Length: 560
Image (cartoon, rainbow, N blue to C red; front, side, top):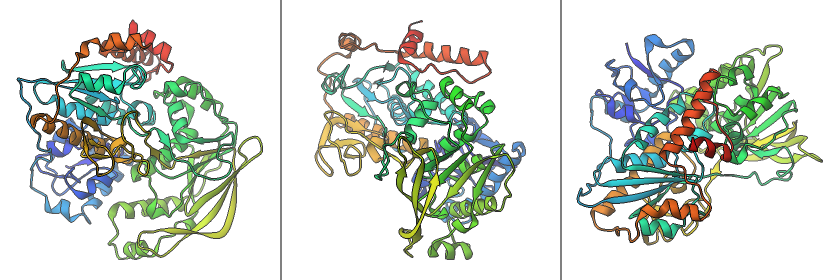
């Protein structure tokens, strides 16, 4: 019997170090880790010990004997990875740890670190720091709740992915960890306040701004960033009062990454199924009245270049009452991919993506079902409408013949009648007060997390970044773990080599300082009160939790 990694894999990679047979790849030290859709267990090397199951924070690993019909597809997906990844095969039997080497701290000195941003990268940096004696961490966030996009970005119908919160809660339970939530840096506390009270300040504030299409009509009513829709249905306080017109028949999502598939899936999922999740109540009520029957997902390039992961495509294609529709004529491959596919030398993940799409394209539609239509090699040129969105004009693209799969537009124009257009073409970071910013990459310039005065410039001592604001808006939980660890290593190394200065001001006055500036900090007990209130309300209704979505209500729950 072997074990299998399935849909909810978060690339945390804790299973890699837990596996005594080195049967799980890619490891964080292998080149493919940064771009891997998920991790894979080698069926020829797995020794059926189950160590990986205990380590997985999102319950993504199962013995093959416990897989249902949907899960059994991952047996082939896991095995296929090892047909064309020789670096993984060559490593079989080598059980060396992939953990980075860490600098040692001195128990005689206290390293006090502030982390701004309570998302995955911040938590993984905190975890690495707190493994060392004499380190104290205070974590700040603008919201009264932690966990960043795990709480406000992961789709509510993916509860297993949210299981990583358990690992974060364990980190926060350390006696050397403190929350200062509901605190906005730049308003309630300034950068200078932090640098005078902490030897190191790590900014892990993410990338919260959406990329724009840059076409006419983009600001019409009914043209929205997917980021706002995601925040709305996940109960983000900034978006709790947003409204969207769901009385339309057809919605179009521009972009075909996992966020695009998330919003499409939420739009067409049966509300009875959503009612069992932690989706925000206001979103559940609105979706219950929705008249959306079709969602078209528009991608600029071909199926081989589609940004979504195979597991998310499978999740969408398995939805009851929903037809996934693909016109076989749109599954065109660029010449390099076509040749590699035919001679079986194509990357196994891309080969699986093409094969899955071809299988779906052969399905017959079911009368009365909602539809999710995948469109490839199509670019929007204009959003049309008078008082709101009424159509999306597009142009057909064709491959240039380049090995990279690049495309160019043709003269073939088409129009999709729709009442809602969501752009889901990526995130970008915002400048942080008092820090340099590389506008061309939407990141803070840095070297392994150390903030630089400019790209390739001088190091600014004691100031660091982690996560998307450090490397750009790509990669999920697994990459954020590696990224947070790298930044923590830089902090520890600098401390051990006396590159950091000791605080000149006590940090014990922070809560008083924040209150004097109109803030109401939420500490660890306050968050536990919020968490308990949401879970208790959820238990009464058979749900994981019922989210409190307005800041005033969250503060009241925190004070109980």
